[in-house]
Length: 529
Image (cartoon, rainbow, N blue to C red):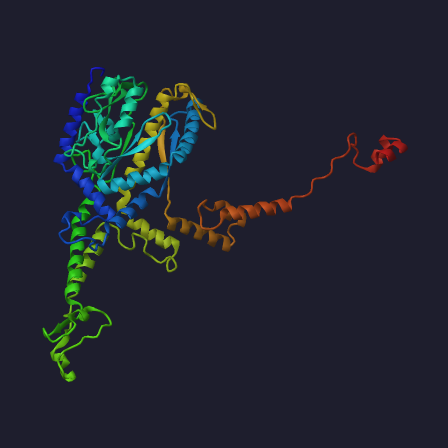
C-alpha cells in the first residue's frame, strides 16, 4: 500500500464518476432533493413564469414515513456468548458506555437525518472517524464503491468518499502531516463542472476557493487502511489501524434494488405524478384567470375614460346620450362555467398517489383523537405502517451495524483502556470479545403513548392499581405530569414519617426509672435527671 499514489486513487474515483453518470445518480439525487424541498418548476426554465402554484404532496409523504421509522428509540445491547465473568462485566460496561455515547453524540437526531436522506435518494451513509466516535452523514452521490453490485458495504474492496473542502484547510492539514511547501503548492482550487453539481453554488474568491479531496478506505492484511489525496497529491499518507477490521461506515438503504448496491428512495417514482398535479393546477389557474371573471366590452370611441374600466370605484363616462341604451355601448360578458373534471382529476391523482404510497389521511394521523380512543388510533396507524416494516428492519440493522463499528473502533483505539462512569473497559476485556448484539426498540408513536396512559388511567379509576403504582408506571414523556406527581408523593411520604425517638444518655441502659434508680445512688440519680 505504500506504493499507492494519488493518481491511482483519482483513476478509481473517475471510474466511480463514470458509473454515477451512467446511472444518472447525480441528476436523480439532485432532482429528488429539489422536489422534496418544493422546487418543482425549475425544469420549465421560467417558460411559464415565476412563482407558479404547486401542491407538494411529496414532502409530507417523506416526512410521515421518516417519522414512523425514526421516532422509535433504539438502544444498543451487548450480551456475552458465554457465562464468563469477564465477558459479562465487559458487556455491562459497554452497554452503559454505548447508552451515554448515544445521547452525547445526539444519535437520535442523526438517525432521523440518515433515514430521511435514505427516503429521498435511496441511500445514506454514516462515517465514524476518531476515538471519540464522531460521525458525519454522507450523501449517496458523494460515496464511490469498489463494487457497485455488492450490497454489503463490509464486502467492498474499497470505498472512496469525495468532499469539497477549502483549499486553505487542505493545505494546513498537509502541512501538519509533514508535507513540503513545494508539494503543498500543488493543492489548487478546482471546479469540475462535469463531475460535481454543487460547485456552482460555492462562494468564489477571498480565500474561500475549494478543491476536491478523496478519502480512500480499504483493507490491508485484514486491517482498515485509509489515506487522503487530491488529484495530484496524497496529503495524508496511508495509515493502517491495527485491530480494526470493519469499515467505519454504516449504510442505510430505503429499498433495495435488484443487482445494485444502491437503493431506491420514496421520491423518484412520485415525481411524475407530482409534475402532472402541478401542471393540472397551472391549467386550472390559467383557465380561471381567462374565463372565470366577467369581461368588459365597449364600443371603441364611445368611452371617454377607457382606463377607468379596470379601476375600482371610477365611474365610466360614455359619450352616448341616451342612458337607457348604455348597454349598447358598454357591458360585461358573463363568465362561462368551468368543468369540474380538471379539479376532480387533480384531487383523484393526489389522493390515489398518497394512498398507493401508504401516506393517506388515516396513515398520516389525520384523525380526531377526541372521536377515537388512543388504542383505536394506534391500531389503525400500526396497520397502515405494516408496509414500512422493511424500512424499520433496515433502520434496526443500521443501528446494529453502528454497534459493531463502535466495538471495532473501541478495540482498536482502547489499547490503554476506556474510562466510563461505571468503571474501566480494559484492552484485555475487549480482546477476542464477540458479543451478541441486540437492538431494543421502543415505540415512540404519540398515539401509542396516549393509549398506554389511557390504560393506566382506566386501571387507576377502577381501583386495580394505587396512585403510587400509577405514577411509577407512567412513561417519562407521558402527557400526565409524572415529575410533579412524584414530588407530591415524596412530600406526602416526608409528612407521614414518624418522629425519631430521643437517644438515651450515655450509660442509661435501663428501660424503667426503677431500674435506673437501682443502678445509681439517689443523689446521683437526681443529678443525672
